[in-house]
Length: 232
Ligand code: CA
Image 1: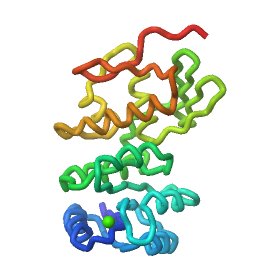
Image 2: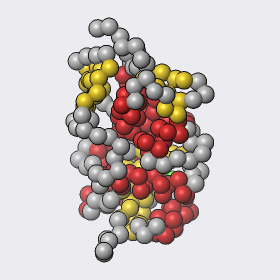
Image 3: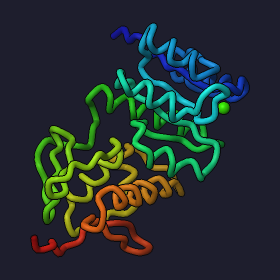
Image 4: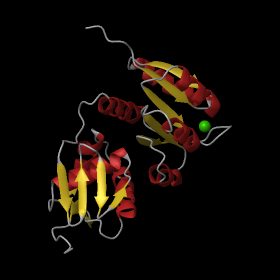
């Protein structure tokens, strides 16, 4: 079966990081292009949309978040953000810029490849952990088909991973899911010690849904959806 190499655009001003990433992606059979600035990235995607954009947060001409926002204004191209500092993680996940996932520098190349593949699988509509249907909890209504979350009458915008995480927890109402189980279900892989990702996303879920968010922490184990449903 002939497979056309998927094209990935790396947006990174630091040449050594770009070539390091290029090396690993090429080894995995991807075709790799590079843009050194935000403007160049926008121009390249407009000229020909790649399978995925690997977007660094720190660029010389504009913030990676701004590039992400501008792309999202007209394109659903999958975007994986590269962040240099741990502090940026909250910003990337928290701001509703529409990135699909992020990796913190310095990253393990195997982890980067796993995330790239996971996003591409998902973009292809295969291996998505989310089924069709509607789940409810109290006055929260989650529609997987529409990827819509309503808290009462209020629509809540969740990033893709936040949505999948919430859905996984709601599907297992009352059952504790460990961080590793959630990583496996929602991100499609596990890496020892990479549970911060889960914690950050849970924090964002709680922030966006507000005080009616039913996700509770089970210390030392993971997370679950509270058994008690608030009375409307
Ligand atoms: Ca950079």
